[in-house]
Length: 273
Image 1: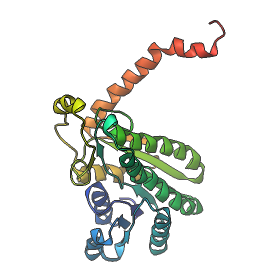
Image 2: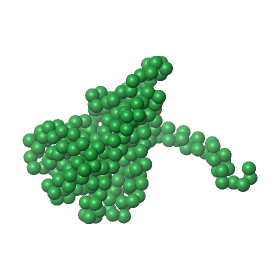
Image 3: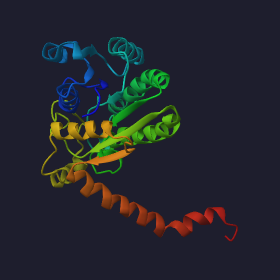
Image 4: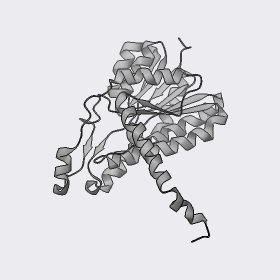
């Protein structure tokens, strides 16, 4: 058992964010639990009392993110783990995506994480420690048809966070990208956005492979807590069998393709044309 930690968790009203907040509270940690509406997290205060700070937060609002992080820090005295979990899915083929849908998605999945991270970093630097946990996805390191917009948001989060990890390590701050496969939340249901379908893709849609199962939010939350407790946490961790089974061979195939075309690619820096 580790010493009690303080957490800031976005999207704690339901799904994985709720599971992470509850898992931390159940073991005696303190949590600033945020959601778009205060009503979505108020019940945590009724259940856990002063151990939880319920806060309304629309992560697309940078000023609101700064205010929420500041309020959490004032109430909790410090922030040990900042979890950027707020996000949703966009389903549809690239040709079908309305640019406004993608902008809205990036506002939450990418800029929301940026707003909260930027608000927290000065506090973490001042205390000389901290851990930023980005809830990414196996879709942040691999890609499948029908998810191009969602992939764009998570691949962007991956690049941003990889650079961030290198920038803040000297301040004693760790960064981890948690990359689950399917999780049994509302990601495909109530919280999802769907494009307007084009008939040209109906056959592909009908033949699309759908994962046979999903990890439970509670199981993924246990992984997140274990990563947060690790003396040397990883930059990335694939979570669930489906994530590992899909991403590892796809990464190998990417390496093989680079090698196959390496000679031609390197020829750009050669004079022997």
